[in-house]
Image (tube, rainbow, N blue to C red; front, side, top):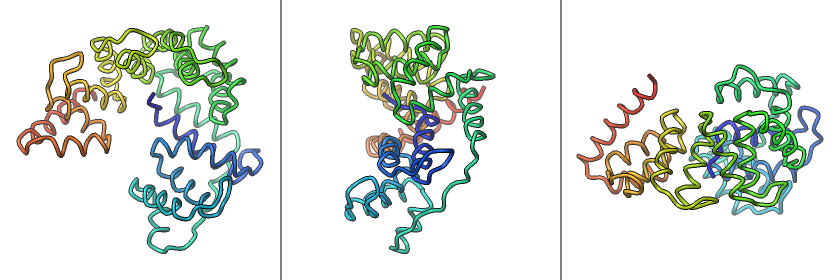
Length: 290
């Protein structure tokens, strides 16, 4: 399943809390590395750099200079300035700790998450559950999300779907995941709509239905959800659940800025097709803005 950018950023921030001992957390390099890895595996630039630093210094993981260099290069390619500096100098570079803003950080995060879901405010329970989730305290998070989900909170319903898909703090149950993703998706939650589309596309917890997959990917894509735009592009590109249209498919993929799939489109499109796809991408972007 694709994760939202804010969720990935939460993981990276949580890694900093453990690495530097911020916001009341004790320094714990093992926990820091594990959370950085969650974000780094989703191509978060800073988290990828910090993974490299952990490998170079042997903090939270066995030293592996060769792999550290690979991670530094990956982070630099993702645009991380610390990684770029490390690659240029070839010297160990440990960035200074971010400002320890205490509770203000959580308040800002709550405000950002509320904007993402179209809510004016988030309950303290959901904010606390998100924090528990980022710190991999899944049982505590699950209890709070369950309560909020049953009260109709779309974000909590979407998270609950993640729990059942991934088996975090609960036994894996794809059908329950689909149930909760559907609840959240029907309320317009973009990440849940994308994940529900993924379930229909791959037959996870529900019978495969590419037409339904396109329906949910489209809803999320039209909200500007990048992962759904990329997935919808694939559906058009290969004609799954919709008439095949490689130009329209690549237009959605270019809009999503998915680097791997954009490169594939660059290689597969003719020059004329690429011009059409890029023009269509601009039209889609303008339409979504309205």
